[in-house]
Amino acid sequence: MDQPKFCVLGAGHGGTAMAGHLSSMGFDVSLYNRGSARIDPIVAEGGIDIITDSPDQIPHGFMQIKLATTDIAKAIKGRDILMIVVPATGHRFMAEQLAPHLVDGQVIVLNPGRTFGALEVLQTIRSLGCKADVVVAEAQTFIYASRSTNPAQTKIFRIKNSIPVAALPAHRTPEIVKLLRTAFPQFVPGDNVMKTSLDNIGAIFHPAVTVLNAARIESTNGNFDYYTEGITASVALILEKMDKERVTVAEGLGFRAMSAREWLYVAYDAAGRTLHEAMRANRGYDGIKAPKTVFTRYITEDIPMSLVPIASLGRMIGCPTPVIESIIMLGSILHERDYWEEGRTVEKLGLAGLTLKQIRRLILDGELEPDKPAAAST
Image 1 (cartoon, rainbow, N blue to C red):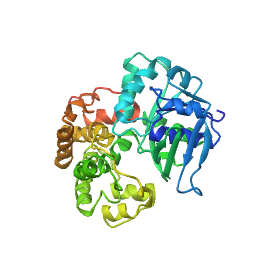
Image 2: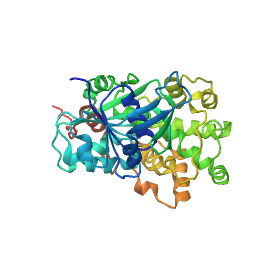
Image 3: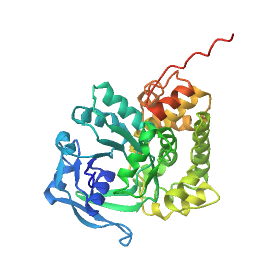
Image 4: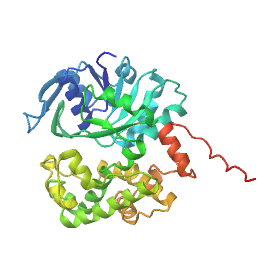
């Protein structure tokens, strides 16, 4: 294949950073957003202005975007790689919009998948009758720390060092990563989507920090550094308990999940004896402000699409997650919504009642076969 053509779906904080970065590297990239409010300024300017505090390390300046549109069929026509960069609550919507227009050979990548995003997207497009030979993959985390600062302008704080990507089914992962690395050498093969899903560190760093800083967020309108000030030594202790529960659920399914402290070292070269020390050592989070309100995707996305599936799996396999469940409950109270009801439970993902063998078969081979009965003894 010649140099692949990209479509970035989603023109928010992350999508504009990715589209601008791809353009800076000379790739043909289109940009889609379902609403025109974010697209119109980019069309008017003819591209995206990328700014950064690290000009020696991160591409910056005006980046041309030749096609920015609210027409998804037009956006993905002739595109090899479809990079979905929206909150996980929008994954199903994107799958529904893509399904009628997909063609053989296209690759869909969720940036990131949160927890079981690839499984949800694949199930959705197939349920809508899409027969195209496409591969769905998910990144374990988002490659950028970025924020939209003005219409058609985005600030990139940091580009992460190493981002695992896994395909569904797992045996397609090497070819997908090879294709992605034509643009992003930071992408590395993940074992499978179970690993990328359960290595979802946003599940640990977002909901609990927001809930535990609710008073400060409301009293200051988020005027403090979210990670470096919001994660104090005491908050970090709670995060470590949640993180241990996440790792234990993964172990119960037969997978090894990376701890949050390990992830900080791999993604940002940030080391420390404790999670709090590692967070303090991470310069990539400097200057990132807290959300201005508790009504933020750090709860609306990360609780139903990250914490709920982890806790739901834990219940199914007998691995309790009491601290995670407490954050789900507190977030539901804050927003007066039932995030258990809204979230990605094992029932919604089609995993309820499956044996560990069946789950592994689904994740590794993309197939689901009933367990064969044991042979009768003679």
